[in-house]
Amino acid sequence: MRTVVCPGSFDPFTFGHLDVVRRARGLSDRVIVAVAQNASKRTLFSVEERVEFARATIANAHLTSVEVQQVPGLLAEFCESVGAEHIVKGLRNGADLDSELPMALMNRALSGVETLFVLGDPQLSHVASSLVKDVARHGGEIHGMVDPVIVKEIQRALESEDK
Image 1 (spheres, rainbow, N blue to C red):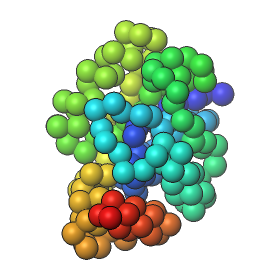
Image 2 (image 1 turned 120 degrees about the vertical axis):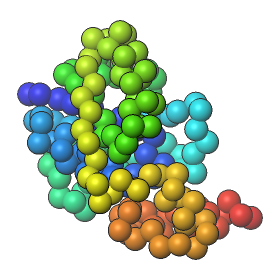
Image 3 (image 1 turned 135 degrees about the horizontal axis):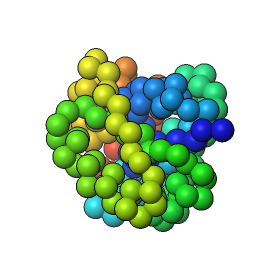
Image 4 (image 1 turned 90 degrees about the vertical axis):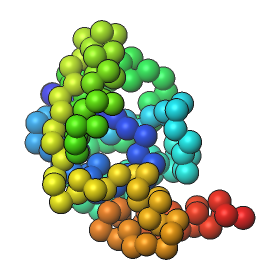
């Protein structure tokens, strides 16, 4: 069984992320969405919430052979532990490549696991977790960027953040 890992902080999980997972599923028998902690990012949601949001979005999209797990440490070690053949990441633009390339090279150096890059859907190239949160903070419309369940949770989290 060919297994690939789609890692990210997913704060929150967007339809852009879902697009990458769908395409990764087309390349493999099993996809593991690996929800990671990124020490350089301050997240709005806990890792447990982010795992649940990814699971809900994937379930609502009726994707099969896709599971969501939390990454307890290094991604390279996680990939080895689940028998992943590849890491699959989406790229929206050149800036994404610039930030993803060093991580891909490090993961390959640590574990031998290659990273495959898929180009994001141009209709979703503006969808980034940070922008979704920023739009929501200012009262903008985020339906069509994240699952409806997540829309409500973003609004709830931002309201409690303001208090």
